[in-house]
Structures are given as C-alpha cells and as structure tokens.
Image 1 (cartoon, rainbow, N blue to C red):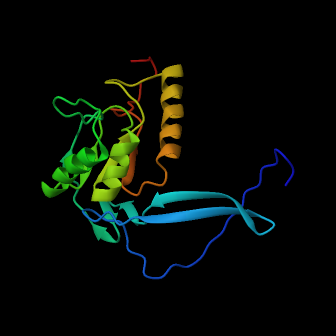
Image 2 (cartoon, rainbow, N blue to C red):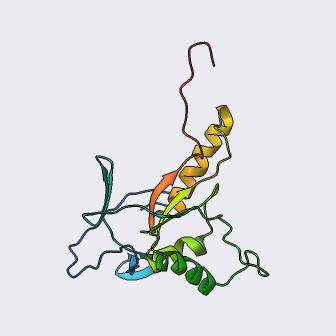
Length: 184
C-alpha cells in the first residue's frame, strides 16, 4: 500500500466451542489482530469482546434465542459512591454492577450521557445488559442541537462497538413527537 492509502480488508473463520455472553455470565474473549509486512508482525491490537445474539421482534427481546423480560435500574451515569465520588477503582464498578445482577436485574439504563468505559467494561464482565445514551436532556432537541446529538451518538457507538453488554442505543430521553402543519 502506498503511504496514506486506505484499504478495507476482511477475514473470517469458523470457531468451535464458543461460549455466548449472557445475562449474569459475562464470557469474554481476547481477539488479536496482527498486521504483518513481509511475514513479520508490525502491529498487534488486542480487542476484548464477547459474542451474543439479540433479536427484537413482535414486542419481544431475545438474548441467545431466549425471550428475556427486561428489568433493572436507571442508574446515574456517574455511578458514584459516598466519600469517593466517581473516582472509584474498577473492582468497585464490578461490585456495584454485580449487586444489580444479584438483585435480579438484567438491564441498566444509564442516565443522560454515555457511561465511562470502566462501567461499560464492568457490565461486560458481570453479565449486565445496558441501554447506552449518547447525550441528551429532558426535552427534544431541534436543528443543530439534534445534529450534535446524532454526532455524539455515532461517536458513542464507535467507542463501545465491541462491548457485548450494550444491547440498546439511546438518542434522547423523550420520544420525538410529530408536529402539526401549523407548528404546534
């Protein structure tokens, strides 16, 4: 490839004995992508991810071919703790999110903004599904504010695209309403 040239390359292979990521069972894999030049590795990227199957049809949500009733919490995205605030180590995020799973929750809907990566990855580990917002407010946005929300949503999706616990993306806290012809 020439300097600055962009190419899209795809690869695929069958995998045997794969364990699906599921509620309460955050089975994760490390996938390594290696770029070789003349047979020698020049770049290696590790991606931690899980594999699961979701289906949203006929008013049902399916996870790995099983209908699942969604129940859980609308947690503040900061997920802070008394005395420490939001500066918590990863084990505290695991502890906090595992408490939701032990309380029979299978979904956390983070409030208003994309949660920090530590909590997203914690939900991957403990098997807690997530609804992830990009950024929003208590009312609909129009014009440039709506465009900014869409741009933020795109970035949030790219940033968290390999996290199996993210099953919903949310672009606003309120449904978009149709307006009549007179603007009301």
